[in-house]
Image 1: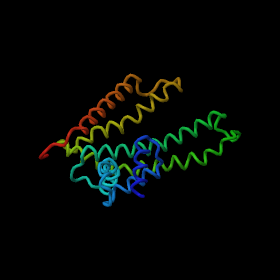
Image 2: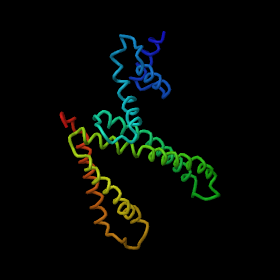
Image 3: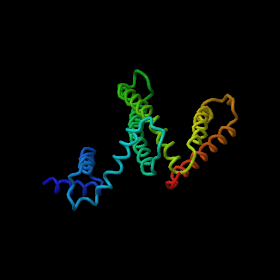
Image 4: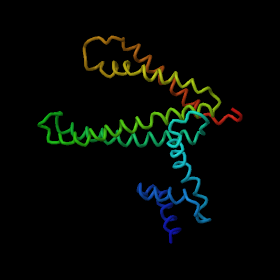
Length: 212
């Protein structure tokens, strides 16, 4: 009976019709050892994602060793999906509230702030939680690809330094006062930062180097 139910869930999963709870059932089933022989072909498909995410959490501050491409990108996908969903919820609620009127006490949907703020805090806590494991898996991935892990310093410094140029660009259309940094310099810095980050994506996607 369980095998029939699992097969039905697999068909629904492949058609994009499963709920989060049903997908968790599939992950739990294929994480175990009691798998029907005719369903073994699906084991790796359901195991690889959950296994790699658990590995990154288990190696929360482990900067030694190596990480495969699938481990790195599984973790990256996990962080992107969760943070994207939370940010999307905040953006949607803010848009709904703003469509009614300005953010003042007279806005009938001003009560949405009591929902927006906790979600925003949850997003911040999630990203803070993911900071160390993300840094750790990136360092392990660079080592696995045959690069020296310390080269991660360059994109980190560029991203930190991009805060103020990005702020200048964002506020450039709201204030007639000339910015402290000329806009062309800000654009050039941001474009250079994006180019460097894209280069690092290519490096991180390199196949494992045998004997590295």
